[in-house]
Amino acid sequence: MNKKSLQYLQMHTDLESVINDLSPHMLGAKPAFTVEAKTPYDLFIETVEQAPIAISITDKKANILYANVEFSRVTGYQITDVLGKKESILSDKSTPREVYYDLWHTISNKKVWHGTLCNRHKLGHRYLADLTIAPMLDDRGIITHYIGMHRDITQTYEAEKKVSNHKLLIESVINSSPMAMVVIDDQDQVILDNHMYKTLVSDLDKGEPADYFLKLLRHELGKSWQEIQDKHQGFSNHEFKVESKANKPVRWYSCSGNWFIETSVNADAFFENVSKQYLILTISDITRQRQQLQELRLQSLKILISEDERIRGLRETLLGAMHQIQMPMNQIKASENILRHKNEQQYEGVIQNLVHIQESGLVAINTMEKCIPEITQSPFTSVNLNQILHDVLLLSDQRIEATGIEINWQPLTSLPTMLGSENRLRILFKQLIDNAIDAITTTKNLEQRIRISSDIDTDLIYVYIEDTGPGIPTDKRSKVFEPFYTTRPMGGNQAGMGLVIAKEIVNQHHGFIDIDHSYTQGCRFKISFPLQTPPARRNV
Ligand code: FAD
Image (cartoon, rainbow, N blue to C red):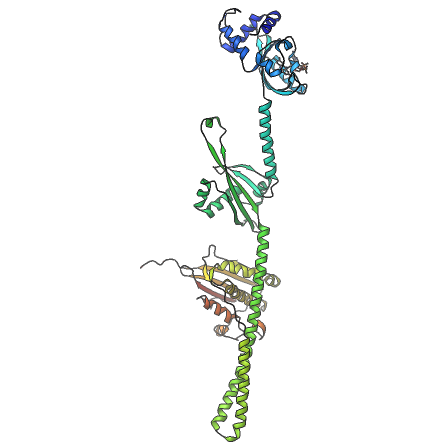
C-alpha cells in the first residue's frame, strides 16, 4: 500500500478495523492484522493497491481515506491531492441529482449501488465512470465506511453508442425506402422490418408476407433456391400476382433478395467460428407498372385486331362483290350456251356481245381478286388459351360495359398450353364473343349473360362460349359456317364471313368448332384443340 494512503488511513480511522472489515470481502478469511509481516493481509493490500480498477475507501460522508494507483491513473489526481477530499471532487456536476439521491438512498440503506456517473478528469475532460459502491458495516451492523470501485467506460460507451447510432441510421434508411424490406433468419423468422413491410402486413390478407413470398420464391426457384442460398447469391425481380380473397383488385409484387452472414456474438462462439445466415428480402408493389404494361399491350392488341378487321372487311367486301358479279356472269354464260345451241346466224351478234360482257366481267373479277389483301400468318408458338380469352375480354371490355351484359368467366386453373397463333386465336374468340354480344342485344331477355369457360380431357383443350341470346335454329346451324350466310343485313364485317373465318382459324389449329345441340337457353359454341403435348398413353 502506498505510504501516503496508509499513513492517512491510520491517522484518520481505525485502520485495523477497516482492513479487517474489508478482507472478508476480498479474501474470504479474516487475517491477523500486522502491518510489517508479509502475510495474506499484505497480499490483500498489494492486490487492492495493484488492482486494475480505481478503488477508493471513504468515511460515511464520502471523504476519501484511501485510493489505489489505478484511481490516480483513471482520475488524473495524485493520491495526496484527494486524501481527505470528498468524492464529489470527481463530479462533472452534470450527473442529475436524482442519480445521487438514488446512490445515497441505496448505500445508506446498506445495499450495494451500481451505476454510471459523469466524472471530470483532473485535466478537465469528462469521462464516464462505471461505479460500484458498497457500504462497510461493523460488528453491530452500523455503516463505518464505503468502498467505491470504478472504471472509465467512455470508450466502450462511445463504441456502443456508435453501434446503436449506426443501427438507427440503417433503420431510418430502411424505413424511408419506398419498398417493403424485411430481414429473415434461417428459421424464417422476421428479425427486422420497415414501415412499408408493416403496411404490407395489413394490406395483404396472407398472414406474414415474408412467409407468403418465401413460399412463392421457393416454389418458383425450385432446386436453385438451395443452391443460391448455399452460394449466398442474390436474386432479383421475381414477379408475383397476388389475388386477395376480399373484393380487392389483383396486385403485382416484385421480390429481390440478398443473403448476409453474421458472425455469432454469443460467448459460446468465442473460440469457435459460429455464423448465421440472414436473408434481406425487398418486396416492391409493381401493380402500376404492370397496369401500364397491360394497357400498352392492350393498345397494341387493339391496333392488331382493328388492322385485321380492316383487312377482313376489305376481303369480305371484295369477295362479296366477286360473288355478286359471278351470279349474273353464270346467267350470261348460260344464255350464251342456249343461243349457241340454237346455231342460228341471227344470234351471232348477241353471242359476241355476251362474250364481250363475260370477258369484261372476268377482267373485273380478276382485278378484284388481285386487290384482295393477304392475311399475314403469324408463326405458331406455345399459347395459353386462358390468357387469350382474358385478352379478348379486356379488348371487348368497353362494349360489354356499355351493353350491361354479365360475363361469367370460368377458366380452368393451370390450363395446359397448345401450339397456335396468338393473333389468329384472338380473332377467333373475339368474333365469337362479338357474335354473342350482338345476339344478346337483339333479345329482350332479362338474363343477359355470356359464360366463357375452359376445360381439358386427355387429348383436347375445350373452350365453351355460351350466351343467353335467341340461339340459332336447328335447320340453320350447319349453314352459319357457309360463306355469305347471315341472318343479319349484309355489309361491312357482318357480311356472313365471321363464322367462316372462325372455322378457318379453328381448322388451321387442327381443332373443331360446333354448336352444342343440348343447350337451349341461347347459343353455345364448343371449340376444341389438341393439347401441345398429349399425356403419354398407357399401353393396353
Ligand atoms: P452532495 O451534496 O455531495 O450530494 C448530493 C445528494 O446526495 C444530497 O442531496 C443527498 O441526498 C445525498 N448525500 C450526499 N451525502 C450524503 C450522505 N453522507 N448521506 C446520505 N446522503 C447523502 N460522485 C461522483 O460524482 N463521482 C464519483 O466517482 C463518486 N464516487 C463516490 C464514491 C463513494 C465511495 C461514495 C460514498 C460517493 C461517491 N460519489 C461520487 C458521490 C459523491 O459523494 C457526491 O454525492 C456526488 O458527487 C454529488 O456531489 P455534490 O457536491 O453535487 O452533492
